[in-house]
Length: 216
Image (cartoon, rainbow, N blue to C red):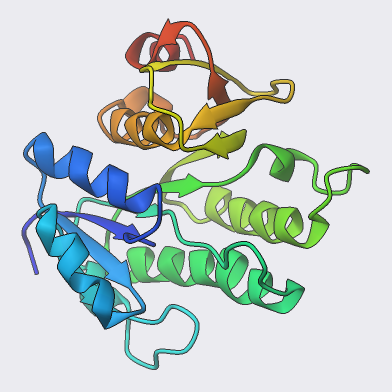
């Protein structure tokens, strides 16, 4: 594979599908990693080429699926209601498996969808410490991977319409953000080399996305 695609892990998720649609709309070739083959038609409907691959259990070499891409985005997750163990095998180990595949397949750019609380996962009161620890461990693995990484840590996610305006910073207070805007931030990150090597929180705000990222 040598089409210079963007590969999205978790491409059928609420952020991943939005991101795929955005990237295709701006002329990118996009491949989407999904576990359930029944989701392939939804990806194809927005112009994303599905890759059926189980990040937790598939014995095949994931590098074969990402080789030739220019970037990868990890937007997968165990999801609400999953146990602590699955948060480790998906939110941590799935992300690390994609990191290793990118290194082997010479995909230099890697964007991680993390979570605001992952900055300090042991703080009391977060309510889902296993998830935050898994995300923090995945983030740490990415930062020492040698890849051209960016870590995006959204606040509480909503299905409100996006505004295209956000607040970003290395350490923000609590806040929420529309999934539309998270997807738009990820797309903008891929187009903004200055975000390489940066980890930041993002919530709804008043600053246009491109301007907010430039201020980093």
